[in-house]
Image: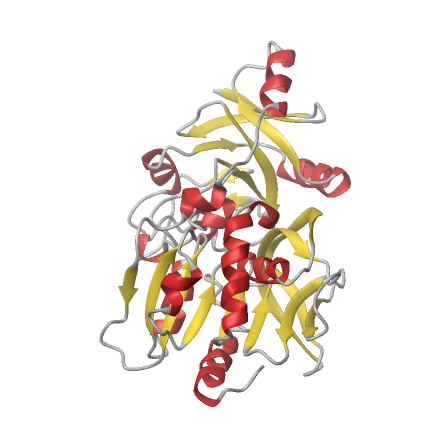
Length: 359
């Protein structure tokens, strides 16, 4: 069945309706990763978005549920050039389309994804709608213009507190879940930590009274400036001064809590090949990234030092807060399916907890 992607500038792209197809409005973004489509689909940071994959064939190794980064598929829609119907992998238990249908995710396939990505790179991220009916474009454009992203973090956070790694005897870590990927928790548990995950609406007082050894602020979806109440609680946690490591949205929220600013990027960073330079080390690592907003570096307190930048566009990739045992990064050191070049940051976090050292 023919179906279409319509962008807010009126551009129309024709394809085939696949998955659990239904008319859906969302923000349209693209990801340049060649592998890891399942990790992308289960990343809560994609809530409210339709993801265009630049790699031409998606689904060739099927689905292994062990690789889920959350409990469900997260994007509003999935857009690919070719959806593979005959996956081949010894770990595969289902095809990609079967899982898209299971989780009620619409897919547009057989579409010119290169043309879509060129448009987004030139014009910036846009709202759009996938639909089978473009006979009334005025109706379609009204649907696009009325789309809003609201309470995204609240929609993906866990319902209640839970503890992972109870049998470990390492540091006790409080993890604030803003849409956390499972491998953040796994990376800590593998290093002997006991991780208590907290919903996004948890107060600083609730966390502090449990006397954790360290604090982890997770990734998540949406505009960080919308998280007004969360930012207030993070400021309290900053003032308390426990060792803290923040990733992606957590990095942005920490900056906002200290008077910094964030801004929307033209088309964001989404992929597994983004070079990040550690200024003090004078070393560059390849990272996975998924964000449409960035910390500008403006308004940060005098003790905040930008210690990592993106090699391609010089945007802020990391901040150290001197005088506090706190460091934050924009990229994903826990990345699955990789690369794992920066996974050593989890070791530095644990070292900071045990020795009081700041990265």
